[in-house]
Length: 186
Image: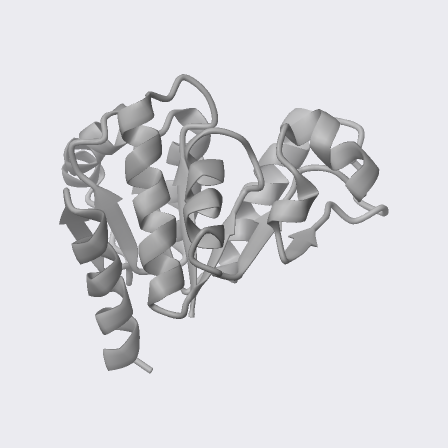
């Protein structure tokens, strides 16, 4: 099972980083693989949590090759067991903002379930992708950011989705819910 962790790349706090590390830890302890957008902040804290528990990690980076990764994304390529790059033939590969959105689609499409912690516009974009394509979604409640507005947005838009949503304030319980859901629906 591959579980994505999506959240704020900047403007985080030590408390939120600890929560993200716990998400990564519990993903690794469950034997699942963690995928992120290979960025800084909360997703990178989740990677660190997974790696301290010998978990496998995949990074979907918004650059075309490893030499650009650390300077453009601000994370170490060594922390990922696999990096997925923007294809060299992508017509907008020189437009970093476009590559970030391309990366969002690729990262979300690769996961079996997606977890959201805090987040801003990019995380909201990843959430709408996951919701539109019917991925199981876990939301770490109490983490702030865009996660606080999801219940209101879901009610306001009333868009049907095959997504199953889980809201919980405990990282361990949230990961357990997603894994149980995956096992039940295999």
